[in-house]
Length: 425
Image (tube, rainbow, N blue to C red):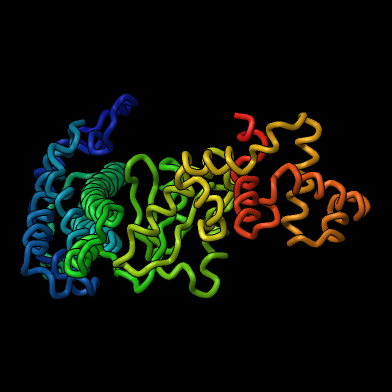
């Protein structure tokens, strides 16, 4: 067994470099510290993304990273210390994100660095058993630099050294991944803030001027469409819905609800696609408008959302506000609607409960059948003569209102708005 290696490995040690002989650091130093330039050259040769990027911020940081990594690795050998500082590698990950690259290239660079370094260590260690692998010229058999006379490392030590090296590189790479993720979160947060500013402004009146919209959209990375519609849904449903909706949307939470601006909602198949994406999620789509009319679609969608929440509109999936204009109209001014109901349905209030129910059913069937007694009778499953008899009584009760086109429309609207329940109130 070689110097500095205990017969029994301490199971409580956390770091694989603790099991490498403490003397290995000094013996390896001439080999390890001489690999920096080779690592850089190999990285540039094998990774296309880095071939031309070694002169800027990234080049400076990666050269520093290689130098610090080599020196730090040697100092850790034979100790159970944690990595003293991974800031350099954390910042490398941040720079990668700022340069618009994925982590693939940097991860490859770490693998190349460990491969080059291990190749040099392995070549130097060939002489540790008394045979230096030399070709007689004082150079090792791989054509590398001069190896030390004896690294003093046995086969077990070499195995532990390899384990330590690759665990060490893995921790450096993990620090870079963390840096990349941190920069990614900052960028995402910034984009989210800019998109919120865009959506919040689109929800306000008046609509933004073209120059203001262009500026906000550019900062948010959004292309203003020729037409758009406001989609309103619960704030807690917004994140899931956005993952299912088309990428070209702009979305944020505004005033306690989720608001999504959908480009060209009337385009071929668009509404069906929206409905599929929102299946099971209550949501309301406002009318399609041009950007200069955007407050109209927001106001309409918000009004329809309130009605969907109180049960006046269907409560599952996507509801188009334009399919429910009458309901929206009757709820636009509740006091006006209540007055209409009270005035036009007053004759019903004077009836008994059973008579009132029969009158409402007959009136509704007759009005829906556009005055066709036969059709109304079919809907009511009674004889046409029965309908005529009931209508005669109703026309008498309503004092000629049902013979007037405007009067009939008002009665029909009052029935839609509240029926006898409101009439009693």
